[in-house]
Amino acid sequence: MKTFKFTIRGNEYEAEIKSFDDRLAKIEINGTLYNVELEKAPKTSKTPVLVRKPVVVPPGAGKIERKQDKLYKVKAPLPGSIVNVFAGEGDEVKKGDKLLVYEAMKMENIVTAEKSGTVLSVKVKPGDSVLQDAVLMEIEPES
Image 1 (cartoon, one colour):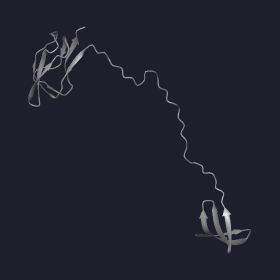
Image 2 (tube, rainbow, N blue to C red):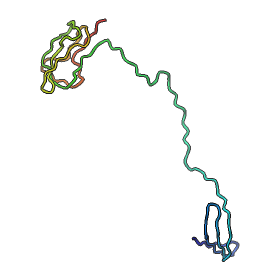
Image 3 (cartoon, helix red, strand yellow):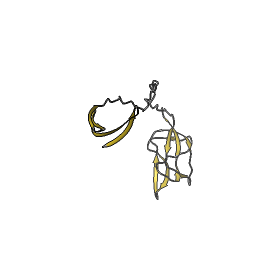
Image 4 (cartoon, rainbow, N blue to C red):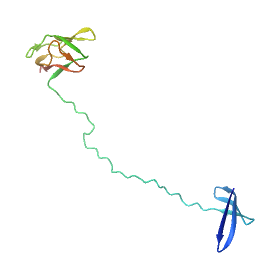
């Protein structure tokens, strides 16, 4: 296998490792064969151990609070342009009433009221282009 030369107290030795099995080795030193039992040093880890403080979760953390907005916002389901507006500020609307017509993907779509209430503001006028989820109107629902 491997041959080593070393000097002890001025004497030179030539050692050849013949076989090595777990903790036993057969070594030939200057022509004499020796069975040697090796002591294994305990393995030490050089990887540092990370110590972290425990995570403190305040009460109520992670819960999504739902805001109770008094206004109902009518939003554009698709991008398009406004063709006609039927409801104005201050108008009373019932569920299912026509609010406006808008054109999207070469089709005219009617937007109806999902709740009854009073129209507080109209954010668009005929000819306006709107993006998806743009607020078109705000309605204050009936109590």
